[in-house]
Image 1 (tube, helix red, strand yellow):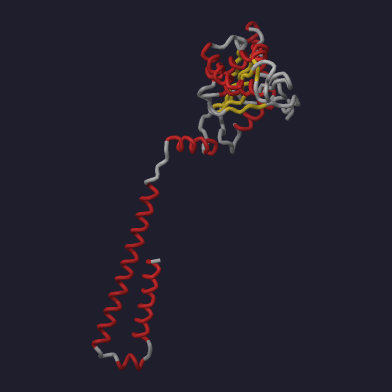
Image 2: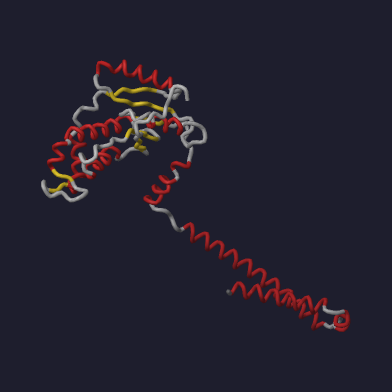
Length: 277
């Protein structure tokens, strides 16, 4: 408001000065040699310059103050981490790496999506694909690896390496078990009385082998894909009515924590890859 008043006074004084100087020829002739009018004009001009200088100084002070005020608001470490995670998929990654864990045959969707992410105009343009799959026997690992490489070549999917994992059925480490136990403990209820969203000890006992398998998969992800730019993995789908929601989510939480961005994909068993497309 104060700045507006000063600007308004400047225009009023300027208009008065113009009227007094260029108002009419008679007034100009009558007051041409009047020293008082000359002195008045000098005062008006001085006042005009003073108003302009004050306005500029005030505007600069306001601008500097505003910049100092914005600069003093620094982001915390948590805010910087959040901004970085939000903008992560907007920045292109040079020489990126996508790890594909194809654990089940879901129609090829788990392979197609990372392939599309590596083509031009993607933030992972030109990224290399590493394919991980599981083997039922250590004796057939080399054969399965050659078969997977031939299949990818038929699909015309570029890849850098193919790995066949044979020890996914191994019991997870005790440290991993303790981490998962801390996740599931708040959702365990007594047998016979199980509210929605909870699990029971009998269910944990019945699903022990599947729990071991999911936790072991998490250990393998930590071992092989910790430095990847993106992980694409087949989503384990439980049978309806066989596994409670809390137990299923505890598997996913224990399997995916402390990892790079991980995309869980599950197709509907319909093939999305052909030899002719």
